[in-house]
Length: 604
Image 1 (cartoon, rainbow, N blue to C red):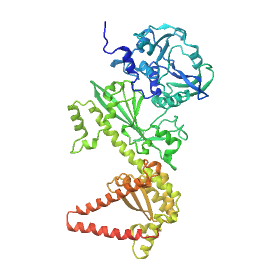
Image 2 (cartoon, rainbow, N blue to C red):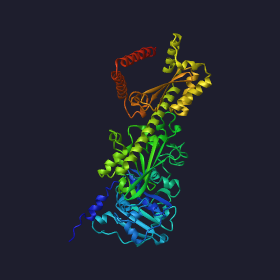
Image 3 (cartoon, helix red, strand yellow):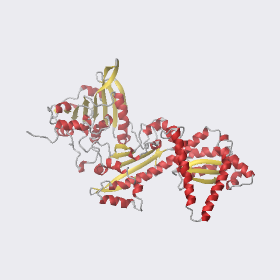
């Protein structure tokens, strides 16, 4: 009598909980196999039947198939494909494509169904061989080995559903669907289209692969409930023709960050060889974020489903890793980061056997690198420390540091864009005559009558066109979007306003800057200063951009920010090195307070 370490029927039962997120990700494993086998056409076929549910006729999926025109398999390879942990791409010298772990076909299949049948052929469909796995037969101990493949015709049902049966190919059929989350062909296809379009975007965009998605009636195969072809879904939004809604369905919604040659390449020595890792960045174009609540428009909602760092292995996306994102900030949808590495670095990145996650890469996202670098350490020294501790994630540290630094830049840019767009939107709906800019202009006029003059007053004699041009260019130079700068300059000059209030990412530790341009005073808040989100942004952001805070919470955050700002000034006075400088700081505070009183004591 023999005793297995793990009885086969119990092992297979445990493998059903192998971490596939849903049917779309499980089906992707079958598509991986097809593309690895050189398929140019892959078809997802969902067979439905009509059933009576609550006295109503409804469609329910009964079988799902994936058909391809790849190279097909002979009897030996077909049996290997149905074995757990076996396959033809397990060794280092064969790790060049999307396959590797030898778990894909059986593991993905049993995560959704109790029986999987495979037909494969290499000399026409009439030469097809068939084998299968059945969980019921494994459970009752009548199946301990993969059945010897036998010649067997492809069922007529799938011949009718297919657009074309190639001379070579494979058909995988799932039946006894006991773990399927989605019950209709439409639900399966709609959810799969988004995921599959993103995973295989590079293959779809280059037209190396075509993916057809079909829902049909099993009893009447000619009756189709849904039929479509998957479009690329690019989370970096740089591809021209994708599933993104209009007006960005046929043009990129984002632009490359870092110039035309926007790919950053890292060389990594691993396992005695040098490998290349590429990182690409993108950010939303101004036109994508213009108007009221762009995040609520169709293209904004599409982008909200594509938030995260896209982890790409051998041109196929593993996942969108949200560890790098700030979940409470809706602006995260407006940037894109893609990191691409070869299969030879699977161990380094920590790729799971279901090819849905790179856990080592995700772990370095949690490192507080800035904190680790305190005390004068360089990133190289920190990496060397990790290598001495034999931390396998050490080679990823520089990559993580570079991604985090760039994301900080992109987020600062988006904060500035948001501030500009929000103010521009409010200005369009505001009575300019009652604006704070108009009130400040009137107070300044009275001060000039009382004999006070400022540097900006000299340029008020310029023509309106000159003033508008100078002011517009100054705002653009500050980082204000061109369209917003143009409108802001035109409104300021045509309405005779003295003051311009804007927000931009300033390369200074100051909370705001003051410049005299074209006869106006431009006050630009530094959106990259910690005081900005605490004091300004929390109040002026629309409700759907504020992370869900209610009014009381937002007011409290703003009050706290004001207190901290004043505490910072108090400490500034306290730290002055001698009595003279401290007195000068105190006098500046008094003079500014006196002027502030005049500006604030208005009818408002």
